[in-house]
Every structure is written in structure tokens, then in C-alpha cells.
Image 1 (tube, rainbow, N blue to C red):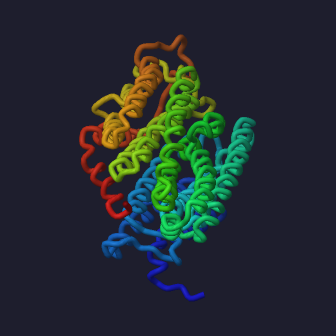
Image 2: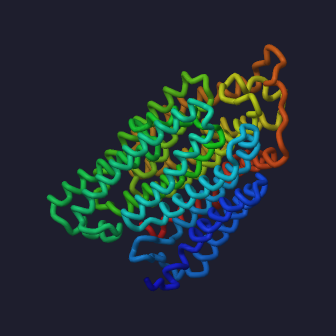
Image 3: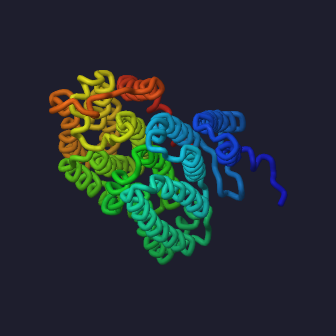
Length: 487
């Protein structure tokens, strides 16, 4: 088959990363030093990010680059999402290094699987066809199933992997069934053609499309971890090694947002009244179940898992608006959430040591006495997740509320505020434990040493949460620019 060079150019970053995954796997056989695989993986992420930016800005002709017979697109939204996905994975690998080393988790395989999943995320956010969306989702998901089970000597890791795999397979089936209905109604797989054909089709075909929409949104909700399709989230977050939990809790959320935009905004804008109503139900259930269930948790990983369900509900509020302002607010929110979650789970990975897992809220007791700087960074993250000004979490929530009020959904904005107030309780509880409780006895929990690399990474992460809240203008401008040509 003849491959046209302009068709290859937009996927150069994905091609490069695929080649590097093969090199990392081979290097693990012939050069088993663990640090070598780490440096190779980090260099791969940096170079891929540079390639994404260079390819877009060098060939950008003020229009989207759609190649491979309309199945792949490189636009502003894709570039922004890819950069933040790669940044999230980069910091994830830094936080994971010491944790994986202490628990003898296969380092080379961890990075190879992580990069393979990252390739799936990059493909997903550039999808311009229902087939490409499916391929991106599967390439994102399959490596993470294996990553959850990497500690084969731990029964709960195997159990979490099985739950994740089975529910993921169910979600994939629902997603594919929805896609088949959309194909039947529109006679096309290209998202632009699907949108065009549905706009010109009869009401009978629209009924078929609405039927498919229900299954497609159910599959999307499974992947995002939105209620009532959230059952896997707390079990997988708790059962997986903390380094893997950190991975699946951050970058895939950004990719999931990209999937939602490609599917709802790009493919079926004609049915926006229908999917707005469905997303309202998902958002309200996610905010309610997530916040109330998180209150009773003593395990901090499960608490953050239920918290993630609530935050997905907040993110969906921006999509419900069905305006460029709402989409930009949702993008700002999901990026902010990813940065905050990186720091939160990264802190747990840093605090965990050989023979000790920082999993319970009580494991953070007297952290201010043991390491004041780490306690301060965790305080910033918890306050930001709770929506305390002037941190980025507060600014992100304000953006969503403004977008809701702009489309006269004041009642939804009021409910979101009430749920946010409820959610503040369990974040403040973590701060109370760190600053106002003391250790009963000096044990292994009292001995705390942190590597310089992890300390620098957590510091950059925490300071970013603060600075993006004080100076959010640049990120807001970037998010609005992502939707200037899409809408």
C-alpha cells in the first residue's frame, strides 16, 4: 500500500513512541539496569511532546489536519490534550520509581505497558472515526489491566485486575453496540459524516441513533468512572499498587474527556438535547454518590476513588452546557483535576516504603512533625480538591458555575455548590490528621526519607496547583483556544 507522506506526518509522535516501546522492551533483556529503562521512558515522553508541538505548528494551515481517510485528526484540542497526557505520565513515572523498586515490581514492563497505554490515549484524543475511538479505548485499557495485576503475589491486586477486566469488557461491549446503532442510523463511521447524515436524516433514523446514544454514553460513563457505572473505581484504586493507581487516576481522565468531546460534540451534536439530559443524571448521581460515600472512608485511596467519581460529575457539568464556554471550563477542570490527583496519589507513593503502605488516612498522622514541606504540599492539594480559594480547584469550579449560569442552569449550579460543600469535609479531615493528631508510638511510620527527585517533583506539582489558581489566565486562554475551530 502506498503511504502518502502528509498522511504520516500527523502520527509521527505515535510512531516514535511505538518504536521506543519496542526498544525499551529489548533493552530490558540486554541491559537489565532498571535506571536505564526509566531514563529511556522519560526521554520518550519528552521527545514525543516536542514532536506533537512541532508537527502541529509546522504544518498548521489554520485548519485541522484530517488524515488516513478521515480516521485521525490533529487539531488544537488534540495537541493540548496530548501535551497534558504526556506531562501527567512523566510525573507518574517519577513518583512510581521508588515505590516500584521497593516492591520489586518489574520496572521495564511497567514502563512499556504505561507507554503502550499512553499511545492509546494519544490515538483516542485524535480520533475522527468511531473505529479509531474504539481502537484508542482498547489500547488505553488493555495494558492497564495487566498493570493492576503486576504484584502477582498480592491476592487483592489479582482480584482488582479481574474486576477491572470484566467490567471493562462489559463497557466495551456497550460502547460497540452503541456505535453499531449510530452506524446503522448514519451509514458512516467518520464522525463528521455521522453528524452530517444525522442532521439530514428522518426522525426514524434519529430514534435508532438515540437508542445507540444510550449505550454509547453508558460505555463512556464506565470508562470515566461516573455513577452509576462506578462500581469498579474504589476496588481497583484500592487493590492496585499505588504506582498503578496513580497512573489510571490521572492521564486516562484527560483522554476520557477527549473521547467525550469527539463522541458527543463531534459525532452527535444533532442529539445534544438528548445527551444533555443523560449527562445531567450522570453528573448528579456522580456528585451525590461520590461525595457521600467518600465521607465514611478510612482508606485514603478509596476516599480519593470516590472523590474522583464526584469530580467526574463536576466535569460533566461543562459538557451539559453544550457551549464552547462550557467545554473550555470542563477542559480546564479535567486538567486541574489531573494535576491535583497527581500530587495526591504521588504523595502516597512517596510516603510508602518497603514493608509499609501509606493507604489509611491515619498513616498521615503528624506528617507536619515528620516532614513539614510534604505536609504543606498535601495541604495545598486537599484544599484545592475541596475548592478553597485561591487554589486551582476553586478557579476550576468557578468556571463551571459561570458556564452553567450562562445557559440558565442555575438550579444545577446551586446543587453543585451544595455537593462541593459536603465534599469539603473529607478533605479537611486529612488536613486535621496531618496537623492536629500525634503518633501514639514511634514506629516505622515515624521514619520518613524522601528521594531528591521525588521531593522536587512533588514540590513542582504542589506549587503548580497554587500558581495556576493565582494566575489561571494562560490556561483558560489555552482551553478556550482548543474549541475555537471545533465548535
